[in-house]
Figure (tube, rainbow, N blue to C red):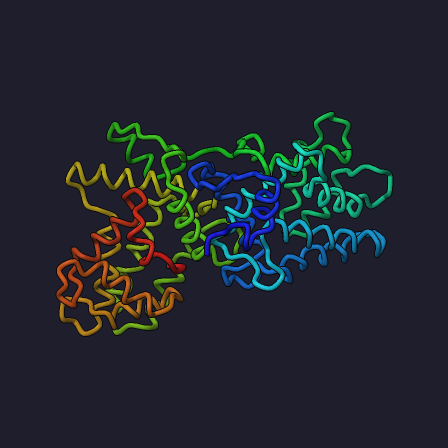
Length: 408
């Protein structure tokens, strides 16, 4: 059900004052989209794709254990969190679905702007001030970097992040945060368009640290990544894939985590040891070319770029008549999936892969329908390769959402 004034508090407020603003996902920068989904996934503790008020209240309750604040201050913080997220779209009974999260954030931001224009109280200031009172551990009326670390710890964020956060917020460079500085930073984050200066500067990928860039430069291809070229749905799909592979949730994908999946497959198939080892080697080669360094792994913030440069490297190999890494991986899985050895893969054999990847096996039917282009009731090798190539290499196409709607 789409969000409107019947089911969302911010839309309700806007319509009550004659503001007819409407959400358009095209107006949201892909990096902002990434940031918002990452925040949702932090709050969605049971990973059911829905944020509810009990999950949200877990975080201020964690803060209660880490500070010297009074009961009154803590209760004020909890109430501010409840009001803030209710206005952000979290229904006390039905919660808020992941698919509505970005729109709920954007309409909340417009409602905050409307309140500001009308001289009404800001809900961001309400939340920020309640946290500020609790964070001011020594009661001196300011928040220093050590006190800020408490919030980072409560939210399971590496405490080193406090220094970056503090540097951005401390606009007058006094070494202390006053209330307006914290409010200002929260407003910048929740209300304004994407600003790269609010994110820590990370070194990008290039031919010195990525195999696909290295290959492209070696053949004279100067392609360079631009996040603006990515559809938000493709961005979401790619991050979902990363989070499946990142087994320990440390925001880094490592080769041992990746090889967990073919090792699961080994337990479910009748393939020979030679076929299984061929599959494991294909997985290793594929993900090495996708940017997963055998020693350092691949960070979440580099994952999307690593995928896109890999896709360009595949196109370059295709133009030059060189072997495809996607075909290498697809064919290795195909050999293992062909359980009865008839040279094709049927839907029951495909279910094995779904089971290995912890994907509901019903997804096999949707996957199979898209892959079986000749409608023979069997998948031949080129059909599976074609589907994998569509997913990894081509721009976003909504017809593939049904295939990749799960964690796979």
